Image 1 (cartoon, rainbow, N blue to C red):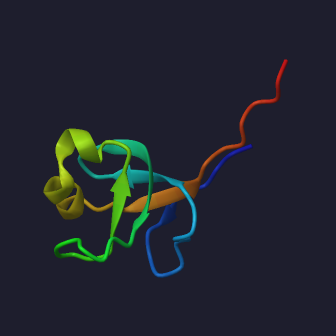
Image 2: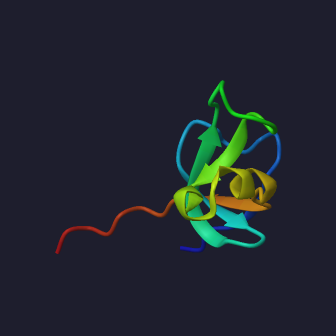
Amino acid sequence: MKWPWQPVDEHTPKDRDLLLAFPHRGVVRGHWETDKYAKTPRPYWTNDRERIYGIRATRDDQPTHWMDLPEMPAKA
């Protein structure tokens, strides 16, 4: 099954983890961060590499496309 990439816009789901395509980070698992203490832009899309690149770089490099995470493979 092919999983189509969709542009990040106001219809992008913000209630679950997604695969996010970042211009300078590649494809990573990420989610919508609603941290009320975050600096601008607040809220923002974050990902599992934020600790490597830092919060500021992650906020500056927002995703352009997304797709749902694929289903886990069935146990053999």
